[in-house]
Length: 89
Image 1 (cartoon, rainbow, N blue to C red):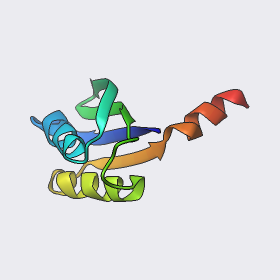
Image 2 (tube, rainbow, N blue to C red):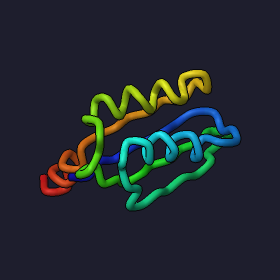
Image 3 (cartoon, rainbow, N blue to C red):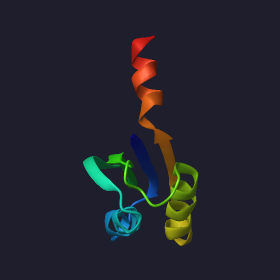
Image 4 (cartoon, rainbow, N blue to C red):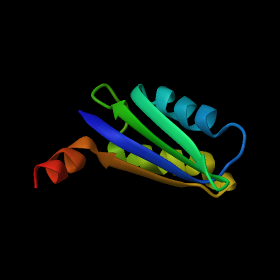
């Protein structure tokens, strides 16, 4: 099973390290990552494999939000099927 993790907010050093570290601690593999800075705002999208994850998607989202809450970032975790089915419509 795969999922999409998105992270947005004001750019600062260490965002990728903090988010990817938390993802790795849940035994989740990052398949692809894209990040950019737009007008001082950090935007990252990760495609991850959660088939061996030690947490459910909801718990993963909560853990990621907790990991970056002091940095005022917004984190979303969505099942990959959502995007696959949207493209078929």
